[in-house]
Length: 88
View (tube, rainbow, N blue to C red):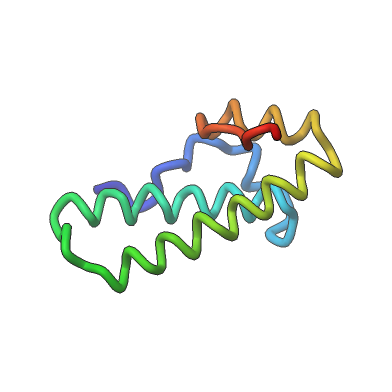
């Protein structure tokens, strides 16, 4: 497994590490790594709980970004190839 799956996205390396976009990028990277981990360790329930927490945090950050800067939100979703938030 490669150490970092999203290293080809060089636009995030220049960003500040505290920005919302970088945080979402970093959480998505962790989700992919944990998903790969679950292929071998399907009964690792404590890691599954951690994955749920990461997904919840990413969802909250995506909601904040969609409200504050919608164009940046759309660009980020397309680059990371993740689903957007449901519109109620």
